Length: 253
Image 1 (cartoon, one colour):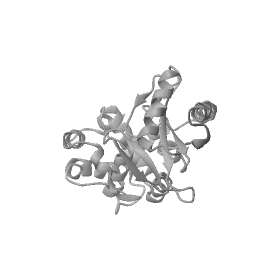
Image 2 (cartoon, helix red, strand yellow; image 1 turned 60 degrees about the horizontal axis):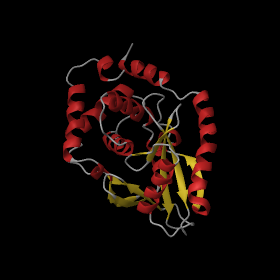
Image 3 (cartoon, helix red, strand yellow; image 1 turned 90 degrees about the vertical axis):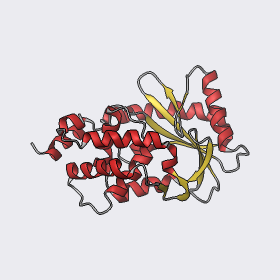
Image 4 (tube, one colour; image 1 turned 30 degrees about the horizontal axis):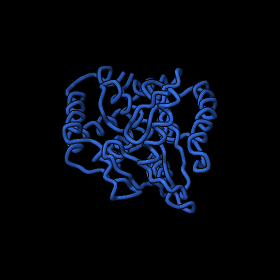
């Protein structure tokens, strides 16, 4: 078995099943009711997002992302909206947890991440999200993020690298990981899965610390600022260890 065949077998094992998709639909109705009860007329919609929308989700070690779209005419800014949602769900006994730009709810059978996103205009896709790490509002375009990920085409490589991240307990936000992978593989051939993952790990080892990663939807949003230099070095050291002669069975399982 080649290295790429080994990795593709893992991806097949980690494929999101029809049962998981059906469960998503059941959860979506519950979440929509919770969000509308909290935000009332300010809520435009609640839709799946993140790795599922980008076709980059794995069955294990993940939560399911939903975007809570908030009306542009809402008078509250996104930091206040984020904290208001957190407080409302805590009062309901849902034990929300603060994450990078989301708040997580443990619904028993699954963990769900809710991403409040306030539109800046109802005639554009530009909106604000809240970075808990930076404690700041971020202007971006989540729709463009999805389109960019599909255009780049590195879904399998990103899925493998997410498994590597999770199995090594690394603090490496998914969107940052996606941008770094795209940068590493920009001139690489499609289909060479193991070689491409190897090249991406080399990029993490050598360039993750010094290189800034900018949000293509807003160059003022420096995505790499989500991590400190020490956190980036931890990822670089893990990538170095992965490339130190270990077999693939020890790099990702």
